[in-house]
Length: 98
Image (cartoon, rainbow, N blue to C red; front, side, top):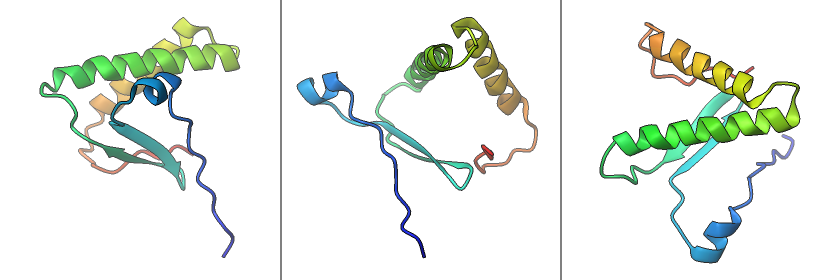
């Protein structure tokens, strides 16, 4: 069997400088999302704030690396969130990212 390499992101510079606690790690494995997380916040509302912040960061990356504007990318991300939220399958499995 061939060696499989995991490609990890670097720790953010401010976390290296000031310390912190990793609360979320998400990977794509065989086309599906694999997630590790810790609750981290007393109020689940804070996860909503975090998820919106992540969406904005992702939209910025798309704007830098593709022909999409940040606004277009964010609209697509929001559409994906709404589609997944509206999915009536009730499945707990991760979506395929192929």
